[in-house]
Amino acid sequence: MSTFDRSMVRVFRFVRCGFDAGTGVAQLVYAFDDGPELVETVTLPGAPFALDGERTAAAERALQLLHLVAGVSYYKAAVPPEIRIDGDGIDAATATLLEDVYVHGLGEFAYRNGLDLHGRIRFPAIAPPVPPAGGRGGGVSVAPESHPSALRAPSTREGRNAPPSGGRAAPLGLRERALVAIGGGKDSLVSIEALRALGVEQTVTWIGGSQLIRACAGRTGLPTLNIGRQLAPELFEYNRQGAWNGHIPVTAVNSAILAFAAAVLGYDQVVFSNERSASYGSVILASDGSVTGEVNHQWSKGWAFERAFAAHLRSHVAADLSYYSLLRPLSELAVARQFAKTDQYDAHFSSCNRNFHLLGERPVNRWCGVCPKCHFVFLALAPFMPKPRLVGIFGRNLLDDPAQVGGYDALLEYRDHKPFECVGEGRESRAAMAALAVRPEWREDAIVARFAREIAPQLGAGEVDVEALLTVDEEHGIPAPLWERLRARFAA
Image (cartoon, rainbow, N blue to C red; front, side):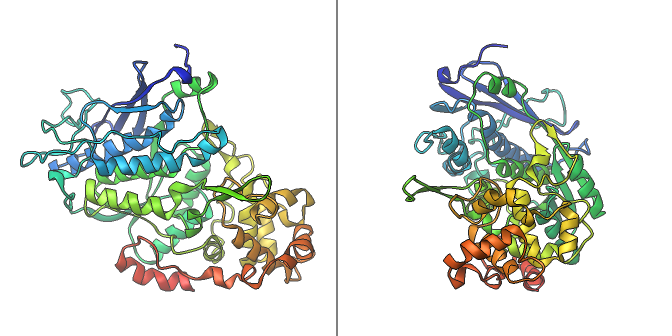
């Protein structure tokens, strides 16, 4: 394998992509300069797939969008000054979406590596001509040209991922069924049970080989879909040779994978479980205490991404393909309250990020007890669960361990910024801790007692009001007919 020198790379290329409906395998091909091709594969179970003309075109457009979004995993290795899309180009709307995903989605990556991506990332856009009648979106297939099930390049010169006929995508008459992303944590389980209660047909879906997620999905008793994703192996070698590395907007990539799967399967909904707290990042302070900026570890879980991505799917893939987060109207504390209403997943769920790693899973214990996710989930559930039940889930009482003070200070945004993790806002942690400080079963625990003694006296009344954080927001993308039935459930 050739030596990788990130400083010498000038161009990141989107080479081609394609899907073989006979095998269910999609290939996404990238390259740096004229270097070796980097081939990622995404595998949909259930092949062969029978696609009609319109759905073939929609699946192709969804695949092209996935190709462009998933490229962020490779682009970050060198952050070269030029991005090139081989073959047909993309329209301005797609370029705008991608620049947002790359700039904001790589915000933590840029911060940790001392990089400034603003103004550096530019996706080349073309103004697509109106194609001939019956033309469909562009793209290049990596499947053999002789294979009857391959998505092939069209004869039209329409730009890649441009809306059909230069306008809005048409409805495809998709089946009313939701692909619901499951990550093994409390949030997706709240969504799954809410949809079940409302009679929405759903397939519980995850990407990769996590046995923990598989067990959790199996516990739901619902149909499941495990999508395979294999990154180009060269990327790991590049990392060993000094490539830039760090956090990527993985929810954006997973969203694009599920949108592609929905187009192939003919389902009309892709559902995630991102709450409103995901829209708020970590406030970065200078040494003198002044605010220097905000970095959102979970930007692609936020409302800005959800709204933009959903609109793009409707305009560029299929007008009747919905993408939304079922938990957007709720805070993390409100989600925790919903989860606490049932104990059927107590022995199966885990939100501990140390159990999930790119190169493998470490499921020896479902909760490590020392990471920010463990800290926050324990704290968020504590106001809504009997103490013995919560301690039984985690195997110990995290709030009675003085060694955890630093971790909880970060959650409280006390002398530290919020961790770069998918955790709630600082005000949620402060309100939850304040609620525990007045409860006899919690107030003597070491971290709760310290909070009451040192931190609570510095807070105003608005900082300790849990009830104010349990309100249901009206800013969301949930389809109106579903929301009318869901609102009452979430308010209870």
